[in-house]
Length: 88
Image (cartoon, rainbow, N blue to C red; front, side, top):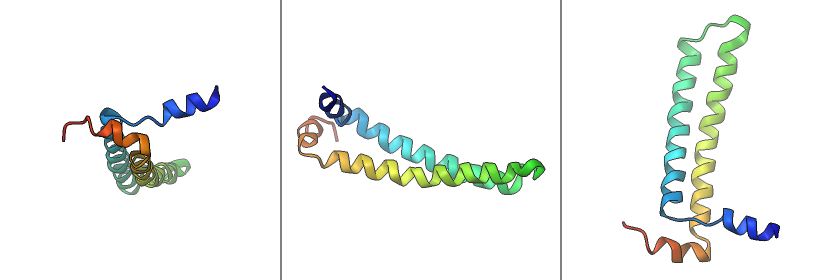
């Protein structure tokens, strides 16, 4: 039964591929904005600027991880069948 759940999670369609790219772009932009905010806007009171900077770096780190995982899901053998139906 658990292998069936995993196979359903690994199904990649047109919508899922677009969502992966969109989430990656949002993570990257939000991370850059948080880094800039930590350096220029957030006060150093209780080291809040370092906390915001850490979250910004994590978002910038997760952006390529999401993009690479989306790519790796798109090269699976069953994904080719699903992606051929997409509009390009």
